[in-house]
Length: 365
Image (cartoon, helix red, strand yellow):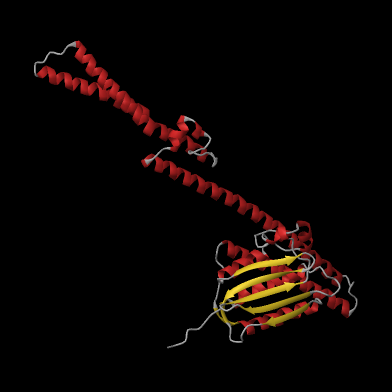
């Protein structure tokens, strides 16, 4: 039975039952009622019933109907329909909706909270789907290039184009290099999946900053030397400076940033230069990685750590990259309790700044 029907029955009952009871009671004490008295009682009861019915209808039926109408919008996937709509507040009905309190008001506010959460969830889902499509497109494009190169050099070896030991060695080195590029892209995709599920595996331990970064520089320096890029390392921290970090993930951060610098150096004259500096900041260590590459425009600088953000889509499509490298870097640094930012000047270079807290051993009393 619908709520309106119940209210009508209740309204009639409010008139009829008391009228019959009053009439029966008065007749039982042998009191003669005049017709005017009966009419007066009936009018009073009827008026009371109408007031109660209207009051309950406005307080319960109208809000429930409004809520039902709003839920139909939710069912149809329309998360823009608001119960407390500013445009409707100019009318009497709108003002009544805005003035709801008590259980009905709480119900309205709960609906609004649910609507906003569902809307946010739907928007996040659409964004996530869009990002995944872009990631697949980027990875597909970036895998196609090294695969094509590997295939070309392999065919050259099979067909005897590389007819000298030097050429064969060159072809094989190129195949290995492109295979490493493919492996790096696959590792990025795997790590992105871990980040998306918040499941990056960390194994934190105490690390001596100077020794650790000296080893990182030695490892990275071999590849940069082969590319004709100069690498400098400056350590201005005390020898016993410690941090708590995951060596593997922190190495990923350094390699990712240096790899980005190499991609965007844009110098073919062998004047590429990267410098890694360790600075002491009392209770923290600041790592600076500076290059003399193309730099980043100020309008792009605040967004470079966002997922899939590319400062120049056409340029990036030629250079390659999944567009998630710096977002991975930021996630790892923040999971270490640190923070990262960048400064840059176009045509002069970019500097990445990473700040990590020191680990200070407590002396035994």
